[in-house]
Image 1 (cartoon, helix red, strand yellow):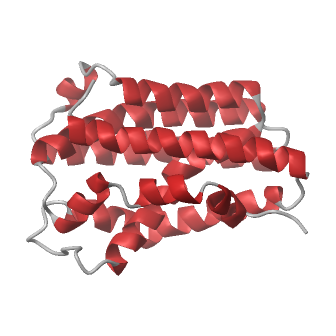
Image 2: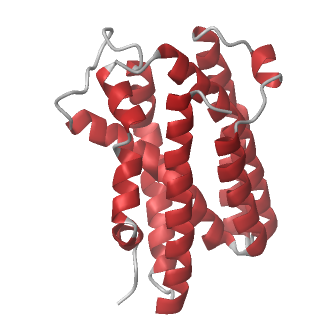
Length: 222
């Protein structure tokens, strides 16, 4: 019997729950998150997306066939041509200009996670890299779904962060999340027990670094 993405989550259940249900997420859903904390997170997330695009470029280099090459190229193109543009527009709504973003120093939590992903990709293969990136792509979709299941979540104009939730509950993002899970499931189904343990370590470490990213937003830390 092979493994699946659900097995990765089960192996790191406590860390995954602490990530999905972090205080930053709860406060965002309730509309009580301090604006300064959200603004700090937004700016650092812009820098993260740049490295996310670099990771897909590395994935293209690691590709062994045209299907993998197209998958990696499409991922990088979406980030560079769509997500970063939307992120800049969103930051502008929060009083952060593109010029501000260009001068922004990286927080230690940003450096830790992005460099971990790139190092994992350099040392390993495509599956290693996708497992390291999964807490971001899959996690944000699950966070939006979890928020929508919580009674304390405030939706609509009374929540200044409603558009953030809407972004990740959107059919486009949810479809991308499902596609990534399917991609992972197809490859995890064939790995050995020893290989799965290696991937579990990567997934846990990446999830813990995502927890640190939320905490960075709350603490306004660099």
